[in-house]
Length: 226
Image 1 (spheres, rainbow, N blue to C red):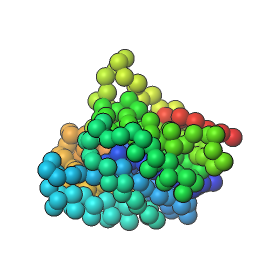
Image 2 (spheres, rainbow, N blue to C red):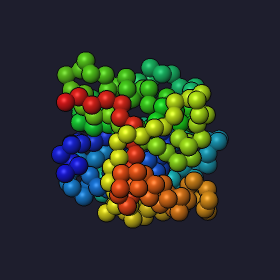
Image 3 (cartoon, rainbow, N blue to C red):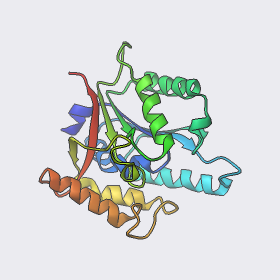
């Protein structure tokens, strides 16, 4: 089973819904197999750029989405959305280190370093600092997921390109992923926008066809220690 390979899994998302877009099917599959899955949302909207009502709505949407996926626990770190570039790196590094150390995951799922949004790039780097293998306990498997609306907009040949080589079959869990994403009504857009249910289904079909499956999620492996 996938849960035997992944073990205790920590999913780190820069913003609420990134975890569903990039790894919702994998999360649902792990949860269905009894694996312990925890989600950490690094940022949230802060006034005056985000209304408090909108922030509360996203939190409630995330709660519903994670319940659909079967997630046992979600933590919000509370750093400012779209403001990590102005945040002290040491503060983010320390906070992520404390979470990784306390949870001691076997597997870490991260945003891809080449994503367009600078928050994604910073979270990736800080998470790797938190997961350095010179510690007594550290994640043995680290995978980077793709986030529609961020990964697909990177500058080819200028920034790192997402070229996946790990594929997780989510045929039996695709509808759960799409249902979870549907909980984020404030974030959804009509097709052909990449934040549409139709586009998410199309990407899962494409990634699945790559490995002769009806639906899959794709990842870049950062590290695996056997």
